[in-house]
Image 1 (cartoon, rainbow, N blue to C red):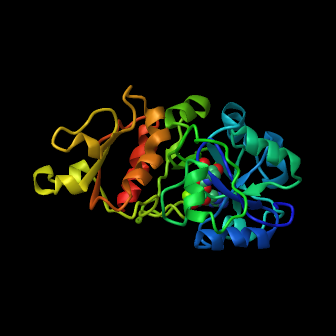
Image 2: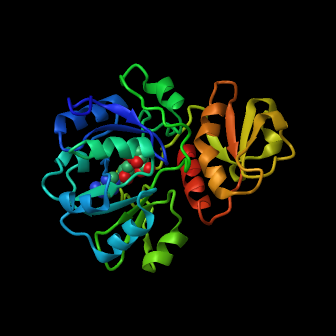
Length: 304
Ligand code: TXA
Ligand code: MG
């Protein structure tokens, strides 16, 4: 299917991806139409080996190499100056390409068999919550893709951390994700934080409203608990219930207070509560460190 230029869904350790031959502009166009994704939002290119970077990027700065050696295969995307072999549609016309070696045995096996890399965004309709199981993909895109490779539940559960090497002396984090800022700085020293918002659209596609449920979702800090209809409200919390709301309407992401476990359960919990039974979804506070930054980022964008 991939060799013929078709799109299939693949598992990764972060979220499921909608994959096609990254070197074939027609195949990549299909990804955009299946997802209903705007063309200004560039795709990440997935490769099986670190050395493949040299095929698609014109510069592999030593700091980027250090990160790749430390974290690949894994939830890290490096944005590097691109070579012409990568079609413009993949990068939305930008002179940079996002590269990543995913950490999933089934997908690595596929990548190693192909003689081209795979462009793959998350396998959800544009703007909705990313899928962390094959079932999630089937529910929303089952009639649009003919193959979904079932690789089980995604272990990390939030997308990759994106590091931009526009200025190699000062690499910039464009998206919080599965590798924490602390881990990255331990490896290459201080980095700049350039998380996009409407006033600073650094990373194309990083819209304020994203990863969103159909049911409105708000931070606990934005609402007055005494004023809401508690039977029509559901809650996502880190490790403790919110006293004033029925416990059966609440999902705890990690009883043992692990941010990694919470991240891996986040998108599934959002989908579960987005079932039409509730008028409002509320999220509690998560520690502002390690994967807590990625969790807070996704919830904040979901609330738009
Ligand atoms: O974990 C992940 O990264 C997952 C799995 C499937 O690998 N993929 C993923 O892709 O999250 P997607 O399309 O949902 O998010 C890709 C984002 C874009 O929205 C954009 O912000 C950034 O990556 N990006 C990709 N290529 C870029 C480029 N050339 N320059 C700047 N940003 C880029
Ligand atoms: Mg996405």
